[in-house]
Amino acid sequence: MNNDNNKALADTLRTLVAYTSTPDNPSEAKRLMEYVAERITDSSNHTVTIDEHAGVPYLIARPDTDDAHIVWNVIHVDVVPAGKDLFTLRQDGDKLFGRGTYDMKGILASFLHAFTQLSDSAKNKTALMLSADEEVGGAQGVGVLAKQHISEGVALVLDGGHEWTLEEKARGVLHMAIDVTGKTAHAARPWLGDSATSRLVKVLQELEQWYESTYRSIQDDYERPSMNIGTIRGGEAANQVAEHAMAVIDFRVATAQQLEAIKTKIESFRSKHIDAHERISAQPMVCDIMNEHVQDFMGVIKSLGLKESGKERHAFGAQDARFIAELAVPTIVTRPPGGNQHSDGEWVSLSGLEQLKQVLINYHENFAKKH
Image 1 (cartoon, rainbow, N blue to C red):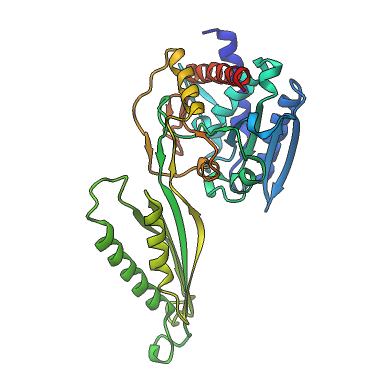
Image 2: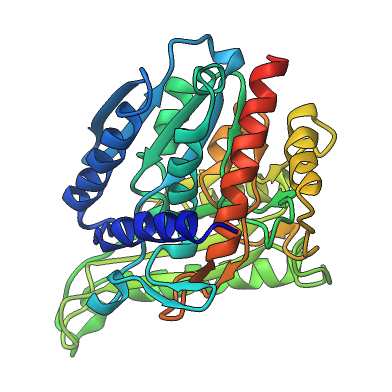
């Protein structure tokens, strides 16, 4: 591996990591996108657009080519919050440490270096989509952008899997909010009021009992839906009967039938005092491993002597790939070696990023020749 290439790739990632692009800091995400836009326009004739939707910035860089003949590289630049020191890249041998190195700024660094080395014909079939809200659900980013820009072709969302393992399935996600209204009174005379918190507790208890009786017998951890009461809020003071209470519940599901069953159950709680509504809803994702685009991409990985770890073929969490897969566009999810995502020890392999650069070059060149 060329040491100069290594240094250049690490330097690019160092620049990207330095942007504190957390979801609550969209101006930093936009600054990062402006840096990327300059890199793209310096080496292509792509049309680059930086804009925002519902306050979330995004970047679209695409050639003047019909949709069926484009490879979309879909990358999120937002990162989970971290201490200031984690926004400075640190290297220890082959490992590069810092916030977003693995999720997913390292992928962006590899793409930028691969893009400059593509032939003109390959560049003319390569597009880039950057979003900045994946860590908070992605609804205003790829959730909107995919429907507007991706109708055909193929998408690379290299944000899952483990060490070149293709992610074949990913669970769907459902966030449901339950809002309860009551009537205030002094806590010394609670019978004069109607406690929203008490009503909410009863609803949550019934929901948990239903979940346990319906799904607990499923032995497989992936196939069994998960339920987590993530937030509960209610009341203003200990000596006052609560007028309002609310909870948000996170479900992860393996099938569309599970998703609908949970929605139906929660909807059944609706009444004069109880409201329920979706905050996030996404179907499970299934990759067609026999699709020609999937086969071609994994073929490039194998041709370079890279071996799948075999881990994480089924993802318990969700990411932006689901929005594209729902459009019946082939969506490829894998990534190079790395680990400790969202933790202080997050890292990515520098040699893995160099390998990814070559994977991207070879795949985009092969795609251009075939399409």
